[in-house]
Image (cartoon, rainbow, N blue to C red; front, side, top):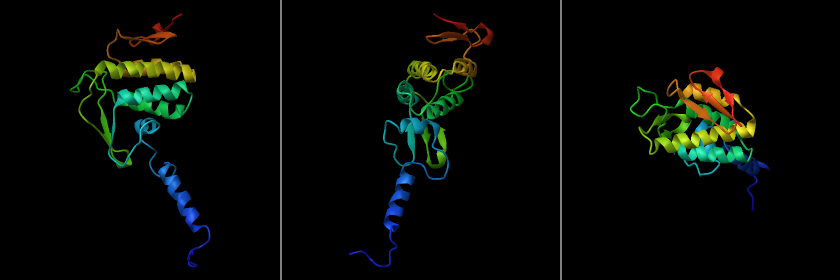
Length: 174
C-alpha cells in the first residue's frame, strides 16, 4: 500500500530525473569530448576513466560511417589535435598520449602511448571518414596545419593531398 504522505507522481518524477542524470542530459559541464565518443561503444563508469586514442579513433570512424553523432566526432577531432605531442615533449612530435579523465572533465596524460603509428593511422582514417560523412573538405587542411610534423609532410585522403607547409599546394586526387 502506498503512503498517503507521498505526492501523486513523485516516484515517477524521481525516476525521470534519475534517467536524465544517467543520460548526461542534466545541467553541468559538457561531457568530455573523447569520453562522449567512447561512451557510445564502451561502458563509461565512474571517474576516472582512461581514454586510448587508438580505440576512440576507431569508435569515431564507426560513428562517421553510420552518419551518427557527427558533432561529437568533430569535438573529439579537435580534442585529439589539441593533445598532440610536440618536439619538446618526451614523445615523438605528432603522437598522442593516453589520457585519464576525472570528474568535471579534468584530465591528465598517462605519459605514453602503446603505438605511435597505430594511433596516427587510425586518426587519418577518421579524418577521411569524417570528410566522407560531412563533406567538410577544409578539415584536412586544418588538421595537417595543426599537427605540422614537418614542412614537407603531406596528408592524403581519397580525394585530396594536403601539403602542411603550403596550403596553396592542395591538389585533388582522382
